[in-house]
Length: 104
Image 1: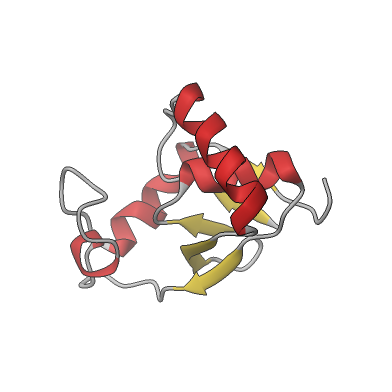
Image 2 (image 1 turned 180 degrees about the horizontal axis):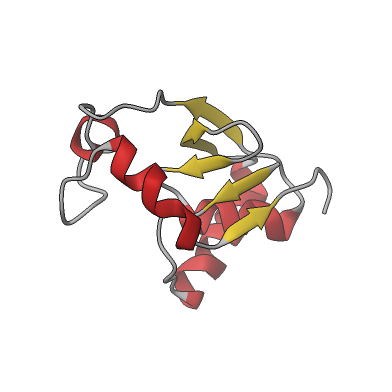
């Protein structure tokens, strides 16, 4: 499964904490847009990286591509600016892709 991350930055200390929590909690649920050969995540960059590190496959809650639904509708408070789902997906080609496989 290929997931394009919504942003490039991450905090190594936060990632370590998420990995540790995920050892107990298991695979995360991530809101993402299905673009055929890949997903574009609308949230959860640290959880996706942690799942990759632990060999876990996230559960995908699919969000439809939309020019009217915004990030505030889907993931309130996750973005400083309000973007449409279409803007996030259309901008995703310049973002990092994470490949996930079960058990590493």
